[in-house]
Image 1 (cartoon, one colour):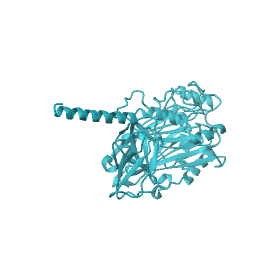
Image 2 (image 1 turned 90 degrees about the horizontal axis):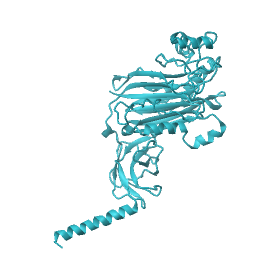
Image 3 (image 1 turned 30 degrees about the vertical axis):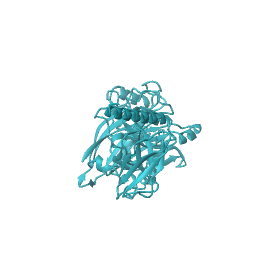
Image 4 (image 1 turned 45 degrees about the vertical axis):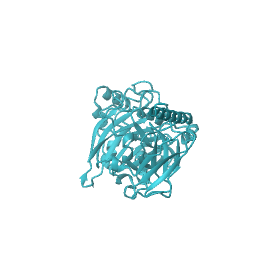
Length: 442
């Protein structure tokens, strides 16, 4: 079994745009772009990205600014966003290393509305599930019912999420059928009512007596009694309550009792895969006090999990051969060879991407996969280049409709401008004439 590493960030951003440098939040402050210690997967969950009616339509049509900000940072380190799922202000995104893109398959997503009895998405859960070298993983971020005294509402939100989330893959159609489960977000669980008042909690935090305050944590109670999240596990947080702060400071807002509202939980299934037991190790669990633009602190955790061995060469289902001579004024051609055992669909498609693409949604143009091969398992494709304004270096990616994932990626190739291509052709002809003349001593 291989081990792959994951880094999870959850943050209620309180309807604010990204103002602060996100590199610390992504643990990249002292990491080189070519470092071998970078995580294999980043998963981000944001809450309250937008929570106003005038922002809903815009965000349904365009990617939100928090996802863009994370993608801008991670793109410099070679990551590609393979999926974003959102429900009003709740946004979940998954990023993977570009060179291991084909390792991640069978991507699906779901949303559960819990606000106003399930009628509205101001509260709820969003998820993304996928397969990693044959094992399944599901990521859920939630924003549950708020305020002190609404413990039962949060319990109900949890059960509504578990009972409603259905994925299209029969063996992993529900959350807890997955090999690995990661559930995180602003769960809004408080300290039990009638136990500690605001000043007492602040005094305990000041004197670093966090465990005394944590004894009254509602989420821990729900997990122990089996009321909610009973199948999940959490490393005990050794950081101060993450809510509620005065914006722009590290001082608590006395209008609310401080609480550990922002959490990251995990589960490892008890069964074996390929005759070997699944395993997970958590390496860190932190709140980041340097961020002050929200009344919540971001919370991060790092993990490593066991997955079957990954053979990059055998993973490619679609293999490309680029036909030379691509230029802007005419379609480019390539041959794609597709494995015979792959259940090809007429809804599969091939996208043209820039060399350093940072999202699977970032294709410049696309064509549907051809129906009939011109030779044994070989298909000729013609890609229009009229959507390109400038020449450059590009790749082709074969996208599976059934798996919502990449099944093959070409080598990098160049698309030239007509002028450059013509100039190169004339130069080649001139050189040929010179060589002939030299041969005959002309």
